[in-house]
Amino acid sequence: MITTNQFKNGNHIDVEGVIFKILEFQHVKPGKGGAFVRTKLRRASDGNVIDRTFRAGEKFRAVRTEARKMQFLYADGTDAHFMDTSSYEQMAIPETTVADALRWTKASDEVDVLFIDGQPSDLQIASSVELEVTETEPGLRGDTASGGGNKPATLETGATIQVPLFVNVGDRVKVQTSSGDYMSRA
View 1 (cartoon, rainbow, N blue to C red):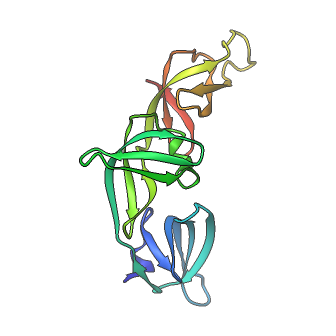
View 2: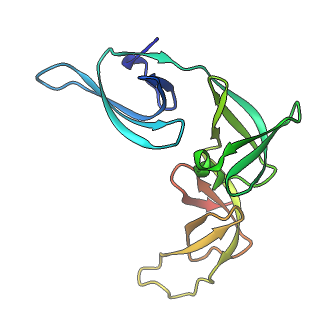
């Protein structure tokens, strides 16, 4: 069993038979009444995010999770296909459950596939990735009044992000995967 005192971002818990991933949590001790924990949870089955409040000290079933190294092969519009690099066994995960992580994953990339109670359910990717810019408009000098500014750029995975005006096609950029923000040129 796991209590609200043991919550950590990224942990998985079982709430009334449904498995959730803890995205963020906050312990609240009001001046009047009992303490409680305010959480933001992502449902493992379909990726929906909900806000939920629990009493302090409430207990939940801890969920067994395991990460296996796999190679991303391709996505066909409905499923994302992966291959276990040790046994060469292939498996498919519905694309909707891993769509966020696929924005930053190229074909043949190594990823950690997260298994919850033996079922594949999520991808664990690095906090930042380096990708090549495949399409963007040229940034012209004097485009902005203050000297800064952003423009949209399409990356080699198909994701579109905002980059500074000096970034050109063919440049490699570092992107933060949790927010999709440009960090620097690679």
